[in-house]
Image (cartoon, rainbow, N blue to C red; front, top):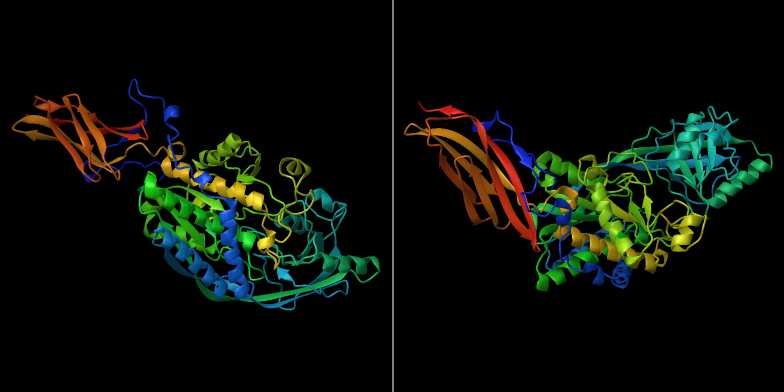
Amino acid sequence: MRPRTFVPSAAAASLVLAVLSAAPVGAAPADALRAAADPLPLEDLVTGDAVMDRLEELQAIADANGNSRALETPGYEASAVYVEEALTAAGYTPERQYFTFEDLVVDELSLTAAGVAPADDLYAAEFSPATPDDGVTGPIVQPVDQLRQGCTAADWDGVDATGSVALVSRGACAFSVKVTNAMADGAVAVILYNNVDEPLNPTLGAAGAWVPTVGLSLSDGQAILAALEGGAAAEATYDYQFHVDEFETFNVLAQTPGGRTNNVVMAGAHLDGVEEGPGINDNGTGSMAILEVAVQLAAAAETDGWPDNAVRFAWWGAEEVGLVGSTHYVDDLVANDPAALDDIATYLNFDMVGSPNYIIGVYDADESTYEAPVEVPAGSPETEDVFTDYFDQIGQPWVDTEFSGRSDYQAFINNGVPSSGLFTGADGQKTAEEVALFGGTEGINYDPNYHSPQDTIDNVDPTALDIMSRAIAHAVASLADDTFAVNGAGNPELTALTAETRCVNGTAVVAVRATNDETGWADVRIATDFGQKKFTKVGAGKNAYQSFSTRSASVEAGSATVSAYRWNDGDPRHQYYDVPYDAISCG
């Protein structure tokens, strides 16, 4: 729930209400109210071993269903059933949110470069346009940097790529950066070859206007390079054609039966994988981590009760074809239930949390390392702090990862919902500094098996999985207990506030009304220049109402002060509202 703006009733539509956060004299300062006293210690209950057991089940599902858990496959259906059965056994009532969407189906995909027809699988880059009907043909050019990675404009100095097909190595920067630089030099198509001997399935990003781009394996790239060195004609022909088809799939959603439903904490991970493999690190790890958190949260609630805020868990469908499931979820709220979107306090995203050459990465919402290429919603840096403070407290090194929006939090941040998340790395290369922090191997990808058939249970690092699973549990428990630092919620909220003047037997009267918008009771005090009234333990949805005589035939315009009080694990929480009223003369 983001901070709300009070809208006066029709009777007071011309008036302005200011919702004040100042504390009364003698109250604790706001900083002292930022953290709840005793969130559930979920990080002690959610272990990497337990999540690994769930990943074994996902691997068995993939093994039994053609080594894939992609959308519209039996493997995806079986994965969803597994999640639903675990949730139901824990006491949740999971629901499927079905949706249809259009996506492309490849009709033609072929490449010949320097006389070489690649032997391994080709993958058109995600968001790549098609070529002309007869393909695109042009001279082969390469960037001039030593590793042929083309990550800066200077890497194309002295190269005339006009009308060419650029041949570029994977590594050191995002695929979109490589293609952007090649396009800026005039390339009309780009061939990206892997830096490990696996097929390459690159993605460019939906926002760009790209040239046709294809990925291929290291061995195929090396074969093309060898042919060029041997004097083969430096020419390539690439043909990529597709049509659009309609698909149907679903998200799986479950919410705690307890907690405030007007201040919901969301945790999400995509459940689908790519067609080419079982998708265990990407993104079985995130999916199974939040499943174990949900199960352990329910178990702890049996003795400790549900936290103050409801928690909604989401397993997104169709992420691998363009973040479709999470976007549908948010767009549906925007169109049909915007108040429910406003009730989401913050969204936590977990996409790959067990990479074999891992980093412990936190989305850089405060932009302390990376300038975000998207607008960062207010409250996101404070959500990031929940993760980083936890890591600091336990002495766990961590690094920032770019707050890019390139996962299922994109639709949330586009609509102003505070967000953060964790990431152990995908196709970027590990640096020497990161090796010093986390171990592993410098110069190779965080996940060399990203989007490949080798993304199996053996592709998951148990240490990374344990660290991240516990951090997820800690963040969910902390925010479920208290989101005050993120959005100011936790202070009791009132709604339907009105202050009206009227005449009663020739005397001006000020009548004030407020409704308790909490799921539990709140103390309410109404104060005017003509008296005050305290209401003790006003129930959820109940009204506090008082009429005050001015003892005069007229009254000037003014305002009543309405305050609400609650306690969160012993911490006092209060909210003040100034409610204006009109002048009136009864003479």
